[in-house]
Length: 219
Image (cartoon, rainbow, N blue to C red; front, side, top):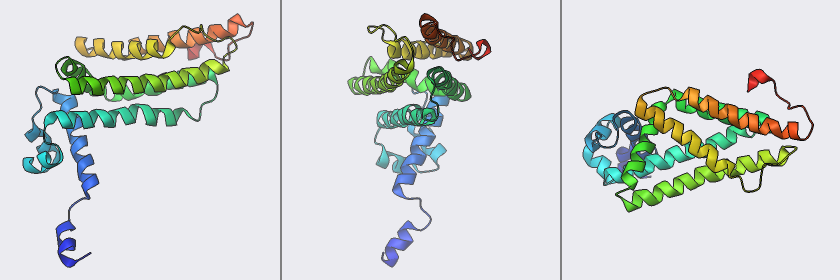
């Protein structure tokens, strides 16, 4: 590297780091204020950069929103799946899957505002609509993969035409949407969804004449 290049780079984060800083700043602002009330200048201020540099990376707010969604998708699918890899029993996996998801959304409930805004924008923007469809299908695919793994370990398999993954993801998103709209805590509804999923899986053991390997206080 030449001396001019060293002077140019000195004190500045790598391009990849700068991009991630912008995405993180956008996520915080969008989650707090919502898409309609967020400006590129606010995001630039949060990231500590000039507005002109922000538009160099992301020409429009829509492009930045799509990147934020892509990052959230990774966080809520790949990381979630990796965390579950240490749990083996089917009931244990169901319980942990819900516990980790509930803990994540409860710690940062404002993040669902981004998904809420995305759904609204999808009705008038084809690109956002397509990106939303891809995201939801990937989330459902991860849930379906997990449910198939769990079902294979249950003594009595669920009905072949029962789309458990879709029911669970729809129930989860519905509970979060309603809680956001009403300004309520989503945890009671999500905990009830966890109870129903665990109870259904426990009945698989009962149908096979076995005792479910779980205590009632764990449901």
